[in-house]
Image 1 (cartoon, rainbow, N blue to C red):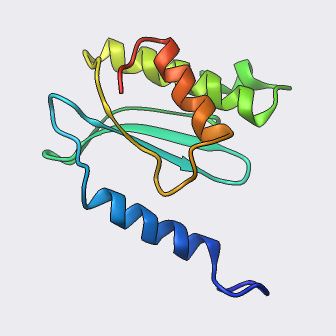
Image 2: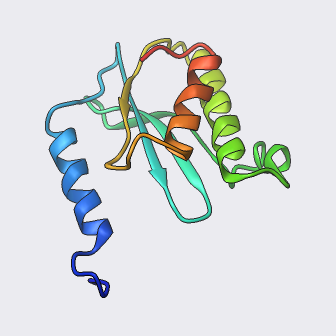
Amino acid sequence: MADIKGKDKNIQRKRRQRRVRAKISGTAARPRLNIYRSLNNIFVQVIDDDKGYTLASASTIDTEVAPQIEGKSKIDAARIVGQVIGQRAKNAGISTVVFDRGGFRYHGRVAALADGARESGLEF
């Protein structure tokens, strides 16, 4: 649905996402770190596109993460989710990933999540 200004932002984001997804893909050796950012939450998955499996995931609504982010800003919550996904990926034996920002601009919560994942040892 289009807003008053014209084009729907989500349609534009999906177009950017398809354009990037045509060029990058996750393999078993280097899976894809995919981000989805909603208005209140942020979700991240490490995906092996060859097999179609999610190898690790984390989000702000995760039962392990939710108590840690209570009372924090969205950017701080995204950094914590990034650290959690980095730890879970390390536990699954993953050290390098391909970063897929999902059509979202690389700033704010997306950049904070990426920084948190790098802090916990993921390379991309």
